[in-house]
Length: 214
Image (cartoon, rainbow, N blue to C red):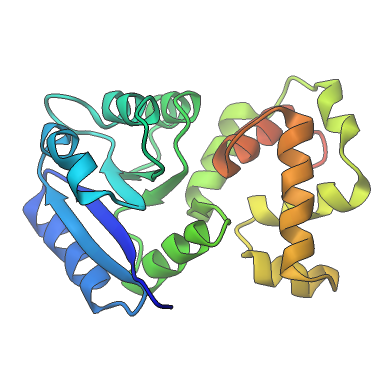
């Protein structure tokens, strides 16, 4: 990789913030371009630091993580926003989904897994802990919708594996197809479900999903 992936951190607990920063700085893939204790700090500097990914604590004082997410999504900047949480908070996860969060990661995620999730996100995958995926399933399971019928059998297989936490490479290996084909299927899935991000697709399909019940 010629250039490292630029990540900004917004976390009001110094120990957690510094720990994540240390993990990123030691990684061969990432560089920390801003570490803030408040959303206000990030928003004041976001155009200067130009992060590829923002790790955003949901439970911030002042401007909340969800409020900051909403503002960032309205800005003329290409950056993915991944929400950090210490527990599976139904209401906050739901509100984050509505505002277009690109992922959800538990703060207790082991360092290597954190790096893997963020790298997968950068490569077009989804950054979400299995615990969060299960919580979203619990929140959205029910209410069938005919949109799900528009998905082909292969598209259902791909999305079902993504929901379970498999990477694009793993999905490709399981289904005996190429990672590029996996990404192609996902693009079709997003188009058919009328969504614009990976996490939004997972959230919507779990909401509509009559086939993902295991």
